[in-house]
Image 1: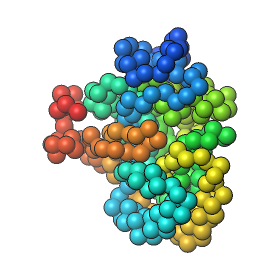
Image 2: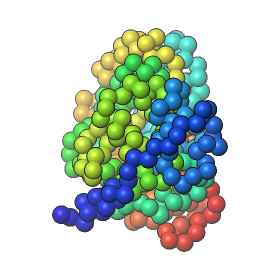
Image 3: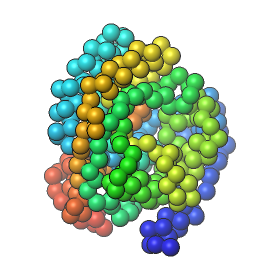
Length: 301
């Protein structure tokens, strides 16, 4: 058994499902008074109150953002406007590919994430291909996303998935409960395997230290809480149109850094705290521009 495998199993061994008595009303304060992971929101009819979500992500390189802005976003904005999806047009996001998201009202979580990081992957050379729409859970209605997928083969893809397994084991113990967007109507409509993963890890993608490839790396271009049924047909037509004009082998992207960020309710990146160079291992605190020595206190977030 290799060292990474042992580390994952050791981390997962201490991660049991923790249930607490469900409060009568989901208030932010209900989730800030205990260090335990509280899954009680999973049984509530509505979404859990969103306080703060943090993530480990790969921000997209400049040339990919330029391609999206010139070849995709003008047509996408026109499509959203025609469908009356004005909130979606205004949603802020730093384009990225997610490793893991976790909810915590503890404002020191970004620094705690930095200290808990497992061994990082090497620079990843991936390809972005296939536009598609994703509903949070079948028949949940909201939220839904318009995504551009990562090609699921090659050494870098395998490295990415292996790191997702390690990072999920290392970072999800820092959460205070499930992601708000995975509660209420979404959790109710999940299949049993997905429910179990949400209970145990707050996210999907791993199971007892094994990569089970439920994690689907992608970059999201639209975040929506509008009714999915009212938009799915025209958005599917739009996805097919974009796929016909996209490079046949996908758009190459070199991911040479990972970032610890703050996330909105639907998964959009709001701001960056730390950027980690995958080649050198150096860590930069984005707000100050200073190198951070991991193991010593960083400035307050």
